[in-house]
Length: 518
Ligand code: AMP
Image 1: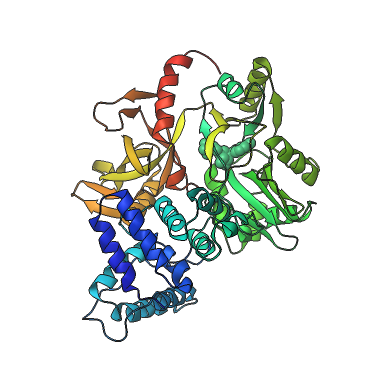
Image 2: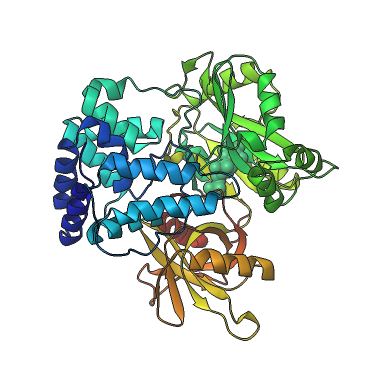
């Protein structure tokens, strides 16, 4: 059983070494030295998580109680901290809050000042050592002496660095290569890049592409292991309990065990799509679900099949996966789709998608494998309205009518492993949303100069704009003109925000496509 102090020492060294290579070596050395039983916990802590990513438990607390006095007793171990966290997460019922606090107080009483600080960071969800999940993954590969690509592949399939570390350190490259998709273990969804028009999509896909309606709902991954059905969001949270209607639908399909990928849309009684917020109500509800099932029925549109009859199809071309999907569903609940080779058919399909009220189309390369977590030209999205997904990185205090709220949001896009600001907006939210956003951002605050509050980049918002401009003020070099929030994307994480490279490409395209319909 290793002492928790090892993590403290590592964290201090990481803080002191600005070089990525140095950090990598430090983390690899730390992992190599751990007893195998401590690996999952230590990897979770190192990445600012109280539990491994595939563990659904959450602490449900905002921070640690104040430290009182100096630690006593035997030194803290990883196992002891994990045990305390488990007790906190599992506290239930009316006395749960008090039980959690008591448990944390007992933990804090055993910690040194340094340990207290590091525990606080784990509870707060951020280690602040400048170590990303990507770096930890590389360090795992280095510690286990396996190629980084093997570790990366396993991470995409398992969605959990702790599990990858255990496999790599125990079984090496062979164990990593043997990882396969498993029903019940969600995979990161494949993502799409923005494209300017169907010409580009056709060219990128070698003159033949599968166009599909782009439904304006939420991504859903459906697993059936032959017995148990489970449903996962884009961020890999489980929503099985909230969607019994989709579970029932899954039980009618053949070809178990299977894993399907699709989009759910909320409908009004007349069958028209409802706003995204209504759909999110369905996702969040975990008790008295049946009432809401009647009030907000769902439509599911499947578009991919990652496993059928227990066989993984991830490496098969999209064309094959679609055939499997069609067979398994009997052709029902599928995304509207057309394989096109010429521009006229493509334009007509795009026009049909918009006329039917959808936000655009997806264009998919029929030859492409499913790349969990991958974003590239194999899947392209083409939307009628110009929107991008930004992360809120700071907010200004409101004045006048907005006094008391954090109401002017600094918007950023992904830039490498960090974020680059591209605009600000106070437009688009209702009063209730401003109030809710204010408390949400305060909980993420990292600095406050009395006017602007910097926050941890976690909240993703969809932003509409009139134009992308070159900007002399933002280091990113570009800015969104007339930015306004069109919705809060609770289903997206910061890693799924638009990238600066995509924004730069959109900037270029403005000149190329201005005045053209598609
Ligand atoms: P965006 O959220 O703008 O990045 O667009 C990608 C998202 O569109 C996916 O993650 C899905 O949630 C959604 N989507 C809607 N229809 C489709 C479709 N036919 N194929 C793939 N994704 C779709």
